[in-house]
Amino acid sequence: MMSLNEFVSSMAPLIDLEKAAEISAESEASSKRKERRGSVMPNLKCTDAQTGLMGKTLLEFQPNKSDVLPPHKFGTHDVVALKPNKADAGSPALGQGVVYRLKDSSITVVFDDIPEDGLNSPLRLEKLANEVTYRRMKDALIQLSKGIQAGPSANLVPVLFGENSPMRSKDAVKFSPFNKNLDDSQKDAISKALRSRDAFLLHGPPGTGKTTTIIEIILQEVKRGAKILACAASNIAVDNIVERLSQYRTKLVRLGHPARLLPQVLDSALDAQVLRADNSSLAGDIRKEMKVLNSKLLKAKDRNTKRDIRKELKTLAKEERKRQQLAVADVIKNADVVLSTLTGASTKKLAGITFDLVIIDEAAQALEVACWIALLKV
Image (cartoon, rainbow, N blue to C red; front, side, top):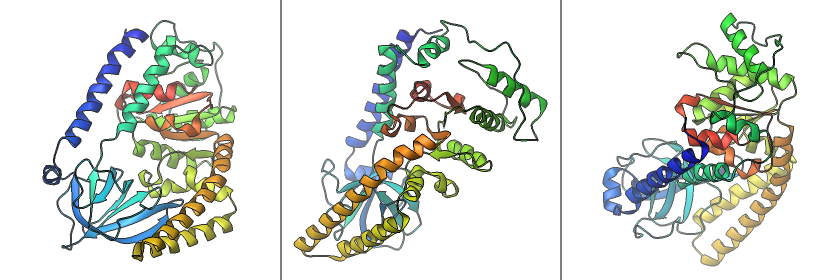
């Protein structure tokens, strides 16, 4: 088995190589070449601006000279840059957002703030290399390389690198299942998991009920007073856990960009819970006011008018963020289960927070480096 130092020294350059290759593929190609590859969507017009998705700005774009979008390789959840249509390849973007909705005739992108200028001119969207994921994995390696001096991870790391043997309680654990349809193999796995003191591996062929077993483990650990971080490699897998846990009215919160979540789990999203934690009538009034201002900004042609509207939008956004920061901490503090993708677990919102238990579903489909982002949270 690879040692900790060997793992870090071998993985770090591989992450750098993959990141460099992705960035190079995007940056070296001309706009025309990117267009042919489908990673640029040119000659668009902004046709609608709304405030939604927990206060974020949704901009809808349609082709300037056609009824349908050109051939492309854009997908929902892609990170994109908005630029003037004739801007040079390396020119700064008007804004950066996430693709929320795709139709034959339009594409809708979510922005944290409405771009300051240029929305009345022809535009283009460019797919971006997602450097954030690479940075988060590299940060996890750096944290590993420095050594874990204190906390539960101090015991977990040597176990997972084969230096120590996993420990478990000698006493059998009896439990009353929340799910009455569990079979004997699932009950046995749950009992063994509840006895484990550091690590437990649950494996089996597809369709044998591993995720169902994980849900029961989470519910039993919450019953015992544990605070849990539940992760998976993909947003779909995380949302699947959220949907199943929601049936049991567990106090949970789903971290992640609202545009990347399934509609049926948005009610569990951090952003949604933060809005509910605030004065709802005031939050609603602010969102209505921002929607009106966004519409005015889209139609405004006078530079001074646009400047004044942007200034007012920034003031409103600042007020909303101030209220949200306090609510974010409260929501996470009060949740028994926090759910995110593996790379999403590195969010600053979880800084300084440790968990009693980390669960990774579909771990065999995840990069080992990404798993460490979550594992270092215990």
